[in-house]
Image 1 (cartoon, rainbow, N blue to C red):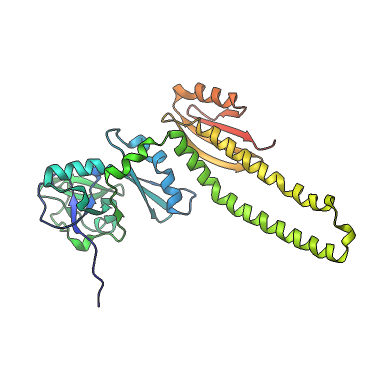
Image 2: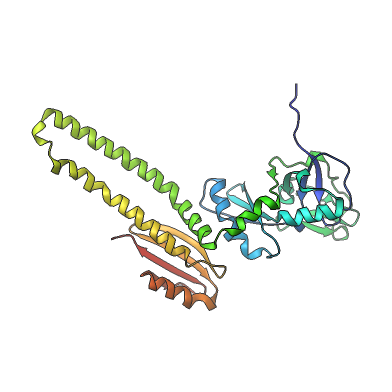
Length: 314
C-alpha cells in the first residue's frame, strides 16, 4: 500500500507563463529568471553552516529590489548556493495566474535538472528551451540549439530535493538584522563547533585529573591541600580567557565588514585569530584605520586584500 503524496501540481515557472490549471497547491521549478546561483568549494561540513555564508557569497550578484531567501545544496565536493525573492514570485503569480501565496508549496531550481539537461534540452514554450551552458541551467531560443528534440516537462522530472517556499511575510522580519550581527554570527559559527569539541575535551581532562587526585587523597590524606586543588584550576582557567578574547576579536572583525569590505577567510593560528578581507580600493584606508584603532595588525596583501591579525594573549 503506497503512501499518499503531499506534493502539489508541478509547474515550470517562467516569465512567459500566462495561466495554470486549477489545483489546491502548486510546486514550482524556478527558471534562472527567478533566482541567482553559485557553486563554491568551502571547508564546511553541514548545510546550516554553508547557509550562514550564503549572503556574503551571493550578495554582490543580487539586485536590491527585494528581500532574498537563501538555500544551499551539496553538490559533490562543492556547495550550490541559491537566492530567490519570495515577494517577486508572489507578485508574478498573482498577476499572471491569480495564484495566492498560500497555494505555493515546494520550490525547486532549474539547476537541479542538470542530469536531464546533459542529455536533452527541456522545452519551455514554442520559442525557448532550457539547456546547460558552462554547467549552468540557461534559457535560450530554440533556434540556437542543434536538432529539434526536447524533453517535455512533466512530473517525472521532479528533482529529489525540494525546498519549502518562504512567503514574503515570513522573510520581511529578517531585514531588521544588522550587517554586523550577521557577520558576527557567521564568524562565531565557523569557530563554534571547534571550540565546543575542544571545551568538551577539556572538561573530560579535568574530570580525569580530579579522579586521579581523589584516589591519591584517599591513600594520602595529608596531601589534600588548597595549593594542590588550585593547581588544577590554574591549569585550565587560561582556556576560558582565550575563548573570551576570541569572542571580543570576532566582534571587532564584524565592525570591519560592509558591502565594500567582505570577509574572505578566517583562521585560528596558534595565539592569533587571522582574518582576510576583500575590500573595495577606495575603502582600504578606512578599514586599516579602524583595525589599527582596535590595536590589530594589518597587512596589505594586494590592491583589494587586507590581512588582519589579533593576538589572543592577555
